[in-house]
Length: 435
Image (cartoon, rainbow, N blue to C red; front, side, top):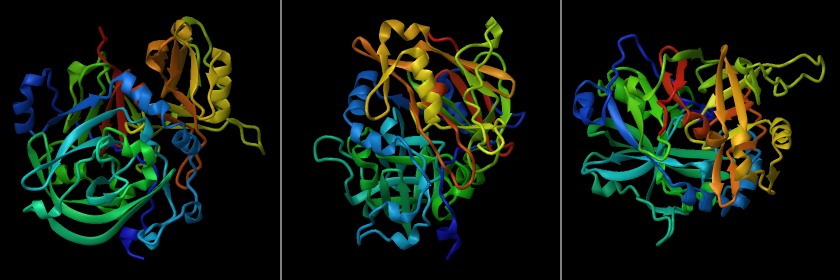
């Protein structure tokens, strides 16, 4: 088996390096200066809450299938004759793009072909649908931009098979190479996947407002051993510092900063948290609770699950994931939390409660001695008189590490997150106060 086919793909979160000389810029009008100095600013667009809710609630069947995702063997999926299953190593991505609420635009090829992509710290590859792709959007609703190699002067053939198995099924295609453009700057000879079958993503992809995925995770988990876009940008000198940061706008324009971070986007100082390993943006959590020690309440440690044989507390681990809109946690812990809050669930594991009660909600993650508190407005989206709670139970079994909680966009909207690739750490601070 080649090195490309031997690599195992699981959830990953990209870590990029912030050096002491990282640049910081304070306003959007400095975009030209940012690019000249090797820091790229890519606008991130948020799907409006009402559209997000409509899509979210119309895909309950997909949600039920993806609510408890395991890294399981190939027998869990039905590959048809058109899918080269021999190129797949049996790993499944812990990911659910049904919940994706943010996207940005990148260009591929010469002349450039534009694609709306999810900037995903939970995977490492770039993929977009290619001309002739099956299950890649409808003729009217959910239309997708499709890569046409014949229209690009910089297209290069690769020939390797690309195959990923998501929790809902497989996605496959072929690797090709072309120029990728971010914020007007070109990354040359970038390998990416031109997908010809996206059926594994179901209605999440067919009707979602995105064409593909741009992974920002570590090269070690890249399918096919392909160097990720960000890593290539750094190596080619397009991105000067191996650092990137997310600002997810709350009803405003968001921004992905590549090559540095923006001090105007957060309050106070960044608190740096070391990664558990360089396969995921995985960190250790001290505790999770519904109260803060700063106001006299003791943090709950109910989420510290116990080993059956010793009854000693186990460690709690989380991944910070821009490709997931919700916060997820172990099903027993989330169930207990929702019972305490008086929330009701549907069959897909989504929780609701009257919006008049939303202000009473509080969830606190204690990480490396620092408390990160979320309130009702951070944890809910209104749907009439009911509010959808942006927390779901998900039990994850991984072959390369423990994952208890996923801190998705609901967390990242509240906290600015800097990814330090070389230092293998993340920096977090509260975003500037929202009006």
